[in-house]
Image (cartoon, rainbow, N blue to C red; front, side, top):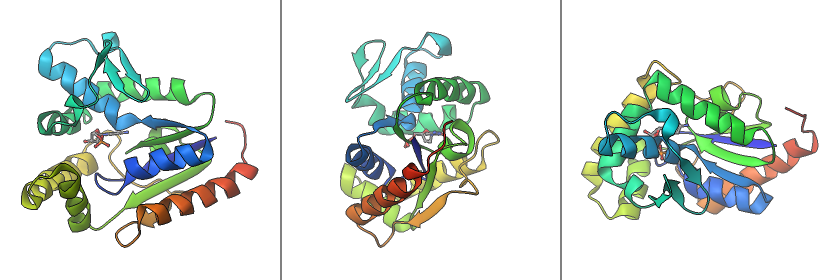
Length: 206
Ligand code: DC
């Protein structure tokens, strides 16, 4: 079974997706970390060959064997990740890798295009969204950075992710849309776990 969780930055995807995966006993896939690895590799070597990138996602994120879990969250990598994620060849390469992983087993996959492009036949699709101010407030709280800076960067990323030509951030038609502005993480998690239990009982093979 695949639970696809898409939505903009700061809507609560990572916290929620991790917890839902744990509650269901599914494997968690953070596709954003893959775009972040591509961005980091590009920063280090602008000519880097996409196919040669060895990205491994488990408790840590490794790139060519190096633990990059922390560095891929830096402001510089975050900004570049949304640029590389707009490139068609990068998206195609990452989507292929993600589809290969999702081909067997039970997954909670989070990103921007899981329900629309990567796993359009996912048994459950969730689109998490929240008020932009609230999303920025959460990220500022997590990172300790000034709210105004976070908000400005978030607006730029939202625009790039939403307006790009290839796989822009949109909710799949059959996604369940959850506005997390006024909900606690636990409430969102419980709702998704309940939906997964309902869908899982009637799950079809992919
Ligand atoms: O979810 P995140 O902030 O770690 O994602 C990093 C960047 O990658 C973000 O700008 C959106 C992009 N992304 C994407 O385009 N498609 C995905 N499936 C996941 C992330």
